Length: 167
Image (tube, rainbow, N blue to C red):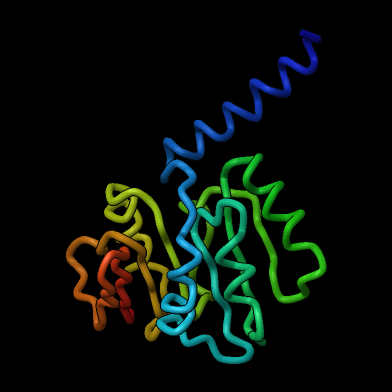
């Protein structure tokens, strides 16, 4: 194999592995749960939303449909980030950022969504408590945020739970 191609493959695979080790391997939110998520987020025109670890941007694109909110996703894997950027082209209210969620200031957002590993939720909790403004809606998929009490748990038989928190 060409050494340049090998290097590119190693970098891309390394990026995926690194991103997975920092928050979660890429496992997408189920499409059949998107309406439940969108309802819990209750985004209003002009509000700002961010998905932490947005993968291929599927949630961002779905939430942006028929919305006048500002939608952002942040992803650490170069591969997933690139796919998300390409698939979001032409959507004026969707912006996909490349970066580490732990280095992103979250103080400007009205709503936050995360589907990461449970140990990452625990690591993010102090960041949320420091940066999120009062009234920010936080929705987590599958796992609750430790030591937080959700104001609503959306349960549906045979589907993962969605937890809604208000800071």
